[in-house]
Image (tube, rainbow, N blue to C red; front, side, top):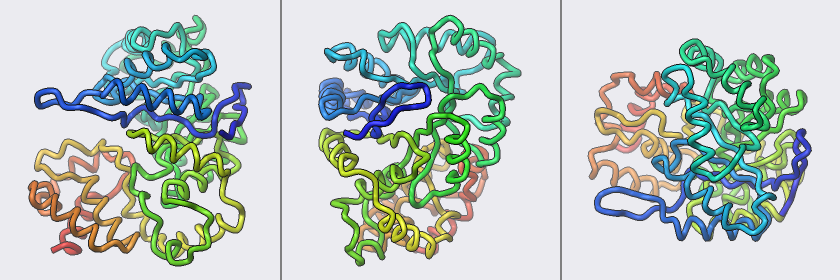
Length: 370
C-alpha cells in the first residue's frame, strides 16, 4: 500500500475506504447493512494496508457508522486507523444540534474523539445560513477545544470559487471534494488547498461508478498500463501531486482487493496522464452532462431516476457502449423512471450541488433513447 503524511503529521494510506456504499441485505421490504460482509471488507482492507476510513451520519440509512465502529473495535491494531466523520447539514435545525450529533456519532462508533470532523456537503452560502440558525461554527470550535474533534474540515459541494472563500476562514484543515478525469472543475482549488497546508481527499474518483469502463479512445489506444477502469480512475487521481487520498465507496470484497492492487501500482506516469488529458480535452462538452451520482436530486416526485438516466446517457455518449446504454435505459422505461416522466418542475435544480440543468438534460435523454 502507498502511504503519505498529511500536514497534521498523520501517516495514511493513499486509498481511503468510503463507508457510504456498504453491502446490504433485505429484511422484509427494507435494506439493511450486511454486517458480516461489510466487516470482512473492512478487515481485508486493513490487512492490505488501508488505514483511512471516511464515514457519514446518514450513510446506509444511518447504519454505516455502527458497522464502522464495530469493525474497527474488532481490529487488533485499531489505533492505527484514522477516522473522518461528518456533521450533516440535513440534521441542523437548532442550536446544539452539532454537539448532539457529534456525541451520538462517537457513541455509534465507540470512540472518544474523531481524527477529523467535517462540515458535510457545504458551500459558502449554506455554511453561513446553517450557522445563523444553529451556531454550528462555534459549536465545532468548542468540540475541538474539548478534544472531541482533533481537526476540522469540510466536504465540499459548490462552485470552486466558494471553496477559496471557505479556505480564507482559516478554520479548515482538510477538504474532501469531487475530482476525477471527467470532472476537473476543482483542479485549481485542489492546488490552492494543498498550498495552504490542507489535507486534500478526493471523493468520486470513479465518478460514483460512472467510470466503470475505460472510455472509447483510451480503450482503443491500448497503451495505458491499467488492468481495468477503476484502476485507471484511481491512478489518475493519485497522479495529481496535490491530492493526498483517493476515497472509494466499496461495496464488495472484490472491489477492496482490486482497488488496493490498483493503488499498489502507483500513480499514472506523466505520459499516461497526458494521454488521458488529450482524450478528455476532446470531450469538454461532457462538463454540462456530468453527474456524480450523489442523489441529492432525489426523490423526484414524478419518479424520474435522475442519476440512472445520466448513467445511461454517459454510457452511450462517453463510452460508446450503445448496447449496454440502451439496455439500462430500457429498464428505466419498464419501471416508469425514465426521462419521459420529467415535467420540468425544476425542484431538482435547487438540490443539485453540481448545478446541472437537469430538465434540459432529461429532454436530451428522451431524444437520445426515443
